[in-house]
Image 1: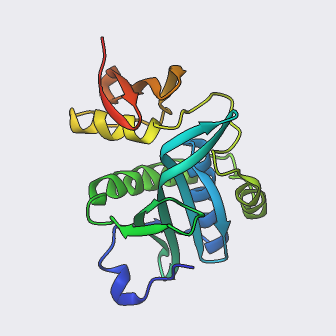
Image 2: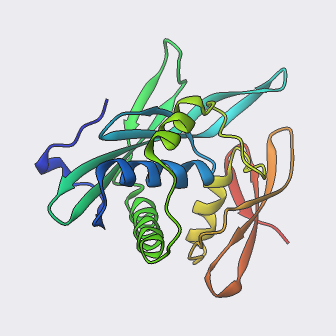
Length: 215
């Protein structure tokens, strides 16, 4: 399990959630990750692990991951609140004898920073709202039950939703809180609609994890 030292915490993207309790910050982060289509295979008192398939193969109707992105979240108490730090790694051939992991925190630094900025904005917004967030235990239970292929949500998110968002960001899209919409999919391909700030959107087509714009 990933735990950051004080030195490491200064070397990876992080953000401070002001006035947060450890359990609330962890639950809030896990809930948002689940709503964005990430599976949550592990949650502890000070860490959480999020996963999303980057490449996969449909075997008898079940998506078998060939390459996935794994995000490690670390929650550290500070005097003003809880600092959330993120580290990323890509995993080749997960859960097999050939499994291979590569740290990609540097490559994904901008994405991680954007995700943390969004987390901070949503935390600040809910602090100002009278509605209380869900309990930490509810979020932990949800994380333990989440399958590798993604949590149950009201709308399908697609295998390559994250890849579609990365492509949209490369085209200047500033992501909003609205989840990317899976419009259509088939064997080895998906069509996504990525929502950007100022009301714009980018339609993206992905084939085996490689994405480009579509009409």
